Image (cartoon, rainbow, N blue to C red):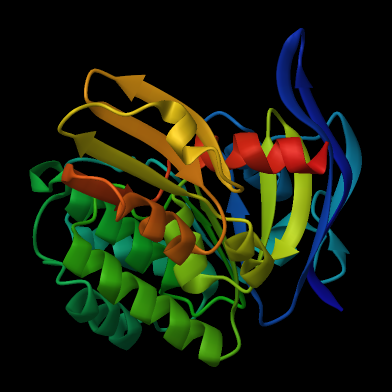
Length: 294
């Protein structure tokens, strides 16, 4: 049985784009990435999956049960962290979490304390006194306090500092080892590569492909930027794997896919002032990935 099964899911908003004919399946116990630029349709898909909004057509199942027909029954097994969290400002963190736990008819007191310690969250503070990052921590604890079988995370790391991000990733891996299935939505490629087994890529409301992370990494690009003393003819980098060459004054930048040693040997032939090699932004990766698919 699949943890999540989405079939031809479509949600339209009049003439505005929502999602169109979305289909993918997630195995139980899998950490599955859902990746795309902001506005691609990730949140709409998740909200439809959770029956927070209803689809125009198509269907979705969680643990074999229709998401609309069995919504109340399903939700007790789901932990959900939305991309933005909003709470009653005057409530204390511990009161909010205690209230959340009451929906699951189980004693979550010990679990809340454990999660709060991991995420360095002060349970005695009022929501109104918390920073954006600490409010996100409240959302994380709230989503995990009942030890759900399915964890759905929509842009979960926004507002978290790097240390908390690492603790959060470690926590998710522990939950996965205990059997939880995780759907991890993000526009940050490195997060998905760090955690996920497979990934669905979405753009403009449509699924481009569903692939193993290893395959996505093989198709990954690096962005090079070089400052050169005397300028350089862009044709110098007329070699396989080089794309999107841009020249500005004495700087040249390009995308490269392939054996990085080949391009470094080429760079070693010239006098340079500085060199940067970095992950291109996700939109650049998508652009070339889509060209390959076409």
